[in-house]
Image (cartoon, rainbow, N blue to C red):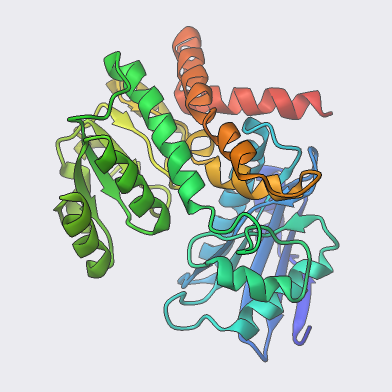
Length: 356
């Protein structure tokens, strides 16, 4: 590819990698297309590192690096918890997904993925869509979620979140029925909107917010949702808070404002820090661990890699088990007196250690 690729070699990057146990972090630049990307491979202990490609206008490369390191580690635990023969990785492209995406950008990214020799398999994530993966696929075979195979993973992710949310409601209230439950959905991208569909069909009352007024208008019209300002979603008195946008939304500023019994959403890395999971436990808020409840999409695209190729019914049968996995994490947390986030990591670590 044009431009250059270089191993991240600064002391700060190496310290970040060592702290989180990453195997490899590679920066890719392509002058012709404007590509600025970072691929982080956290672990290949269980197999090639699978994780999506996020396009976002990060304020700095340091912010992008921090995100990709957190996300790739989360993918290791997600893939392990989902029982997949895959490690964890992630890619971020520093670009505006609304104004700067081009086929050339994703072709350059495809060449970058190809240079990693199969250690990393990419897919759709925030700011990308199946059509972008087609451009990637023109340069590498190490990509899943193509329109001709499993396609858009967001319906599967939303289905898994819905299943996990019902398990969390069962744990909190003794019933997993969403009918009459008030659910605050933060983020109306593809996953958030599909989740709203499931909730609306189940009889839930929806409160929504998003950065896009068009998406908000659609949710109000299609699902009878009540709209609130983005900054007010944390103050909504409801049964469930469903973070379906970016991560670290449960933090020192937002946690005291939450008036909920359950947190169950599709966003990655929902907790700002591990101690916020402990704070939720202390407040009696049932938290469905993010890398378990949002694993439906990766299950769906990973099914492409099985012998014989993608099978929709087989994939969705596996996604339907996410509710049972959430229930197991919540039960383990209660038994050991730990946060559900810590319990989820124990579940994933069991599988990772078994592969040593």
